Length: 296
Length: 296
Image 1 (cartoon, chains in turn green, cyan):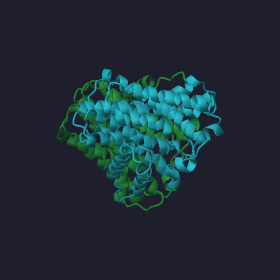
Image 2 (image 1 turned 120 degrees about the vertical axis):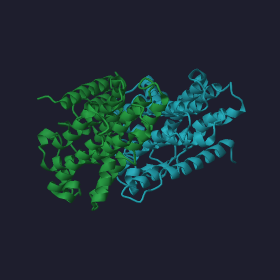
Image 3 (image 1 turned 90 degrees about the horizontal axis):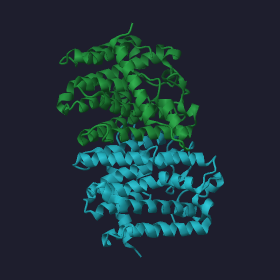
């Protein structure tokens, strides 16, 4: 049965693929492999959770989908660049991603490093492009928030903590902070950027921020559960690497039962943050519930 | 003897160091090494040519040095991130940079990849920060130009062409295009961003663009000459790698005599582009002349 969430995900996925296809048209020169590598990582596959969060939030305020689609592509470009670099031999050393060979396996390490760097730059080029949004204040705010969420105080800082986690014993508070930075920051900024496009002032974004915060943690706990219990063929990447590396995770610290309870509670909390919104927020509610139920 | 250029370079270098010192304050948490790695690469050493170009151009229009200093720090952050990634084993595999061990040697590869990614994000965070410039139009334009100059159509695209150059035979036109992207784009955008801060409309930037274009090519030919004839101890990095890799360069295609002539001619041309400016452009003229004379 196709749920409204399935339909929303399918629509956003097709849209993001089409936008990456235009953005990454392969030039007829020595850079061709660089573009092929970016396309390999960016087009086809991926849950497109962050673009959906951004577009569904922007939809609350009647934002034009052409505009939110561009901005969602920028957020996804940051997510994809981080996956390319994270999969490198010096980092997580993964051969498989979204059911396909990782970029450094399909091409080579140097091309993977540059493909990540290029997607990183393209994200900010798209956001700052007057064709994306006519108001420079909105463009500059989008850039500022995404740069903050993906840099040393956000995603990349969380990845560094994750590297250190392999040789340290982190407690629950530190693991929570690590995960809020590593995955929570980009999930949070996706919702934030949807609200920026909707011209919601910072003080009006509080409930949406609460939603994104709880959703981000629930997502990570669900990821830990999938890592322990999931099917590699369905998930499309190598699993059970955290336990092998002796890393503390929500799962190792809480155990399966409490982790699952905690995940459900966070999802309920996330949904409660949306109480002021009517049926127009049903997609955001469905995303939260999907997080506990997904198998990939 | 201290020339006005020496004084200008020393002033900009000290200023950029101080700004990186504030931007990269080491947090007391598991990310400490990430910040130490960024500081290792960003503080102390480096010619600071791009920041000087940016500030000297902004000076033409009376831009506040506190503002141009922030923007120059962002451009230098992009330059430094590209050096960190370029030095990685999978790329140029260099052990020495600015007379110090490269970041992956002083720390490790994973930290080097993340340190580069973080400086990349920080550059755009600084540019989009309202504290850097009050006008969002200026902030968005700075982001757009820097993202374009550093992405697949600029610096990173040029690095990809450079990788391909090792297994291809490029002609002079292709080598020129490669170098215009790899080093010319960031040199060009430094001048462009100085003009943006000076509120010069795009059509009024033509002569400054001409200056930057010729300067960028002259700089690269001088770099090739230094690579062939320089002293590793003075230059502070491994030399003669292009010839060993069998890469075509300006030098291999033109020979030493014509390369040196071409470099001088480009410097003269660069200076001529500044004919409409008076003594206020003397630092820009001195930078052009310095390019042919430098020994590092």
